[in-house]
Image (tube, rainbow, N blue to C red; front, side, top):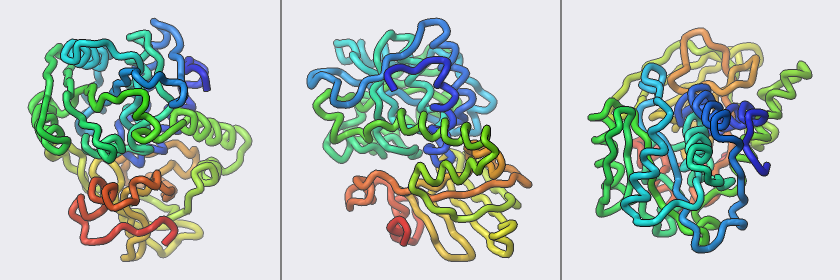
Length: 356
């Protein structure tokens, strides 16, 4: 993929929604924002990690907040560029490249919109390889890159610079600001040099999202199994196909937290699956036994269409298929699990190695 256009945007949004493990925000809303930015400013050039000069200034762009709020409080489309300009002013130098902080939902689309508006290329990679709920949960943190200074912008034109003592403190301060500003803001942070990208990003995830979205679309057009197409491309495993029978969801502390219960149908009749989430799905428990944990991907797809189902989109009666897929191996190291393993989120279980 050499550029992002109106022709491949739908596939990227669909694939990124699946990779987002239920979080990252509604990909449809993000797609509308990216589509309008590309329509106004033209296609976005995509560059591989090894094409970026060593001294480049690469700025990841994202949204922060509760995905449930995004459904009712749609961004005006200028927040990401405002955050980028505020960060550039604070740094005293311009950004040379944009990158997604995560490949998931709206947070894969907002960097595309920002890159189009700023006339900058976007790096084919992201800092998670999925979506995570907190700002310090990024691979650059494992190589000593700080997420400060962090520029925050809201839809009213307010911008704030957070320069914290460490990455966890930056998350805490930014989350408090986010909550005060209505649980939905945009961020520019975790600035990387070009020579840090190989160690700090998961490569080619925008390309993976495009391939994943295309695989689902093509399977649907051929009356094949779109969920099976996604599972094969992700080297994933099937956890359960069933009907959502209960969802308990609340917006708390700038996050959407909750549980979803799914009762199996057809080949999974008589089985049940519970999903625990904090913006993203973090734990899958089948018939009382843990079968998948963060940081591996737990993805919920519409059983008929293969489209991603976000945590805020879960509702009673929806027929879904749940898949698990392996995360980037850096997340399964001890430092990675300290950042994003199940015990960090308060679950009294250890990380379950994929397939184990």
